[in-house]
Image 1 (cartoon, rainbow over the protein chains, first blue to last red):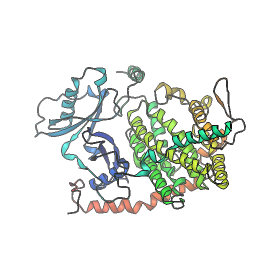
Image 2 (spheres, rainbow over the protein chains, first blue to last red):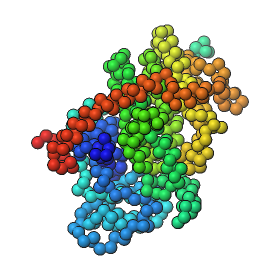
Image 3 (cartoon, each protein chain N blue to C red):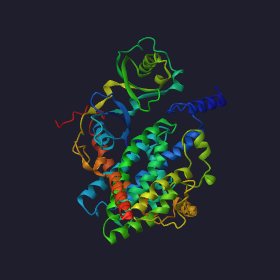
Length: 185
Length: 318
């Protein structure tokens, strides 16, 4: 193995129920189980994600707009059986890669070409697609809670991760008030 | 397209405030600078776990221990976000770790100073994290997509750390005379290193112009430093704490802050390996990496005994 940290797994998160999944980052792990556990430890420390996916980086085809033009068109069925590919796009002024409608394709290249076609409808500058990721839906390993007992398992409420537990603004205002009172006295 | 046309198109994208993604064409200098910044930044997060990590076992209460544990864990997570961003430009994790361990890669100067008292933990959280927030909220708007995304995640967590640190210092400053003295001594230790953390003055900062043109940085080191001073000094003074700089004053007419000379030779020495704790920090980091080797080996051995490394994970023991 060339990397002592294990292969890379792309991590996706659903920030809240009913919200689209978006790319969160990545972890290194030797297998899916550890990848998912690492993903929860790194991207689910604050209970902000309600579900996490991990996908082997090697199965994610990524292209940026500069590369779109040089891609092969989506004609034909590629000669193989089709499967569902997940599509993630970074569009307009949005900074995150967000889930777009999935496509059926025989290969990742074909899926990408179809995803680009799908995005081509958006002519508004606000919606222009800057970069696309595709990967087979079958490659997703996901869970809706940490996969194993881990010391940093998200809990419904952790006071020490709550801004309100450290009311520095209120404290400073109180001190300021006291200070001005004693000045007047 | 030739190089010149591509470069012009790139600059136009930057001017339109578009984010650059890994596959996009970019000048090799843009790539080089970003790799340097992102890997240094990642290393800083990882080494930054050490000075405060030393205090986990000595935290004065269970509450403070939990807070500190969570903070140090956050820093580890930040390192992961940033290594991920650096990997998007082709750097491998092993290369980056090796560069750190052999001293080729740099990390933030501040972590090479000792944290001898509990007040240092609060002062690091308040001063060092506040300085980091100013730098990072600027970088969250930077033109390179992966870096900006990592920064957005980090900023929201770092705000926490600053509040936790400030709250700790407030309690000390309003505590016993000994606690107040401890807070003041910690401020004396951390004030100058924190000002140095913003980097060399603009006149001696060779990359600033290019990095600004490419939308990587939108403010200069001196601008950020002054914003920091203007924000934090009134709050420190309200608590009866005074930065160790007799020249520090706010010009009433302009509203601008004047500070005494910063010892940038010290910054150079500390960044290049000759600070009070460089050897200790790097030694601890290397030891942690080596001590973790058996875990990596065990995971590989476990993995090798299963036919498919990507077998479905059921989520529950069979």
